Image (cartoon, rainbow, N blue to C red; front, side, top):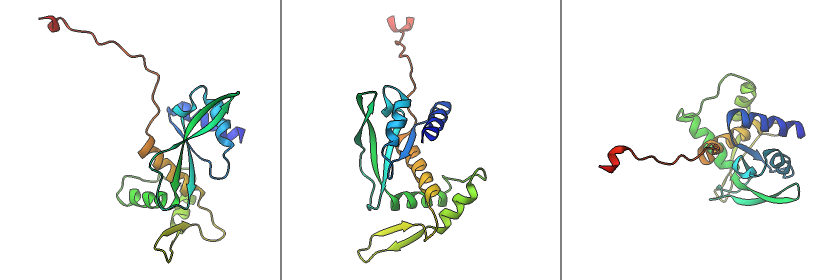
Length: 171
């Protein structure tokens, strides 16, 4: 996990990007990342828990992490798997999301095509990979889309310049 954390930090710094991490099965990973991000990990990291709930949370809740004995908090979102899948589908359908033919794009395409939709008696909808298949890359794409649409880019450290008045302001 240390190697993954180091790579995530390197990519985030290279592209001035925020890290969106799935902590559904491993909440300890948040502490590994936070320790590498410095004093304010919340400025560079968002945690997500993918649930079977029908809808996304309206707002994140603070998730405490310890940085060398100092307590900090990062935002943690509870995200609906159904909403992530439906958002990917809508983005692909309307052309605002395209998958380039690079890296593991073929595996991602196969995962997206294989996801099964089940409508329960209650009317709620559930999505999952068929038995023996995975949906990890599809869920990672869902987190990326969520992060781009909801969280935006981290703020850069910019010095605030004082406004200067022109000579015309005095006339």
